[in-house]
Image (cartoon, rainbow, N blue to C red; front, top):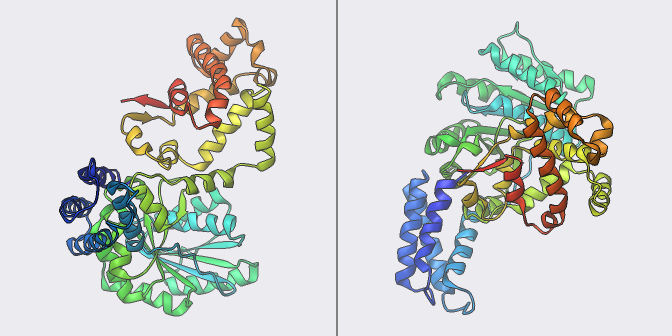
Amino acid sequence: MFESLTERLEMAFKHLKGESKLTEVNIASTLKDIRRALVAADVHYKIAREFTEKVKEEALGQQNRLRNVKPGQLLVKIVHEKLTELMGSDAVDIHLTGNPAIVLIAGLQGSGKTTFSAKLAKYVRDHKKKRPLLVACDVYRPAAIEQLRVLGEQIKVEVFSDEESKDPVDIARRAVEYARQKGYNVVIVDTAGRLSIDDEMMREIKSLKEALKPSETLFVVDAMTGQDAVNTAKAFNEVIDYDGVVLTKLDGDTRGGAALSIKYVVGKPLKFVSHGEKLNALDVFHPERMAQRILGMGDIVTLVEKAQAEIDEREARRLEKKIRKNQFDFNDFLAQIHQIRRMGDLKSLLSLLPGMNKVLKHIEIDDSAFKKIEAIILSMTPEERANPQILNHSRKRRIARGSGNDIHEVNQFIKQFEQMRKMMHQLSKGKGMFPLMQQFGLGKRR
């Protein structure tokens, strides 16, 4: 995410290395490169120019005030503040009022509306403690109805649909009445999209909004389309005056132009960012945290929130005691693997650590290594999982046959597991992470 922009900005700040103070000359030189970095990230030139003018004004105003701060650190601080402002300053929560609250989802075909609708249903259920109902109103693409049904089954949320009807307004109205009868308090309406903006689609989405009077209308846009995403967001807003924007496929966007430009151009907040196919891969958009990621500072707060959402406090205390007594076993390790996988893909999680983007460029993160580890552990008996010390040669041979690995791979894993137990105290101090990852084949040097 934003790798290209982060790298270019880091290069721009190198102009200030060795400088004793900020001057008009070194500020101008650095900001020239920052402006180029933003334009290369698909930010409109006018926005990039205005942004750097604001940074310049702030930098010149502070150049003689903070004498104990290095010039590079001061400019990074100012750029961080201005990036946060550009993206909206504060996180804006979803607005759920009414009984039921109605959320209308709009966007072009292929933007990720249907997947986002399911992710949002899971989010409002898990984080807002609501009872959501998904509504399939894409009457033109049969696969969309089936896709929403499949996603609904995965997250255990009911989907209202009518494949016989071609009237999305009628389907949505009946869905709202059904929700009232069944006690659902949030209705999420997935609508049809087109490959490009056309009058028919705009009339349809406008009719849906007028009929439903939703408490929240969200526009979903593919972050990877860059400046086109901004233009599409502007066109939709002129017709339906939506409440917020959702950026999807953010994990594939190495530039960042859409995230940086939409609030400025449209004047509507970015509310959610979606990344990856997992149905928990949805984050509330926090401008300050995103600015930190763009500047290579990581996002520890989001990482902690993800961990807290998955970690059972009582289980964590139990595990801590076992680690302290060196009783950590294969059952515990398997549980930790499942926990990490629920939080998201490993590369996305590691990218939230400060400075980790640089490291990840040289290390290949391989989530498939988890599967081999799981196969080995699941081929053990309950007694063997709880007592690693009883694994003799004959037991290892049986485990190798059962897991589809050779004896060498099983021996290697068990040896690595024993080393890991000894390294637990290092991990608790934030050390030893990458040697450990490489041991298990999760991080391979490129």
